[in-house]
Structure formats: structure tokens, C-alpha cells
Length: 104
Image (cartoon, rainbow, N blue to C red; front, top):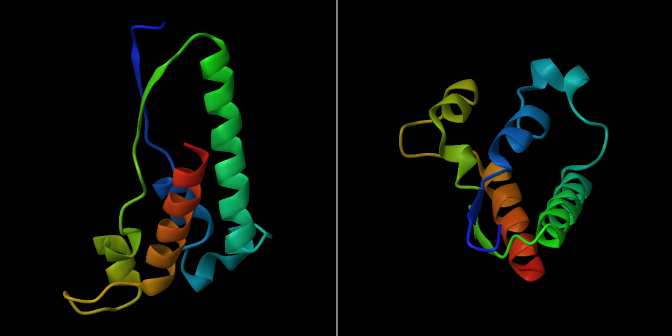
């Protein structure tokens, strides 16, 4: 395990399926605020990485969440022009990435 490299890329689908759904899906959204959701995601990631570390993993590559508000799906459901992006998902991704940087 100590010589292995672990790649971890999480977050994008979590935001898209919980915080960035169109209004039509609001009943399926999580009940926590997006900012509480970010805290929960960071906490869970930290816990899971700690568990893997305790199993002797030492090398990690952690992917960040990209500008999910610029994904074609987000632009289409929000009826944006080609050069526009949805600000809320991008803002949430930036905050999530910043909080993750603090735990590493």
C-alpha cells in the first residue's frame, strides 16, 4: 500500500445531483443549505482519506471540482449563451475546493 498512488476525484456529481438541479426537481434536493452540504462533503472526504491512510496509503492525487456551472447541461437548463456560465454551481465548487485545500 505504501508504494501505491491513490487517485480521488469526487464532488462534481454530488453538487449536480443535490445543489444544482433545476427547480423542477426541488423535491429531490437535499434539505441542508449548499454551504452545509459543502461542509459535510469535506468532512466525509477527510474521514475517508484518514481511514485509507490508517491502512498505510501514503500517496494521494486529489482532483478538484471544476467549473460545473459551465457544463453544457447546466447552460442548457438555465438557457444561457455559449459564453455564459451558471454562477452558483461554480461558486460552490470554488468553496469546496478551498476547504479541501485546508485539510491537505
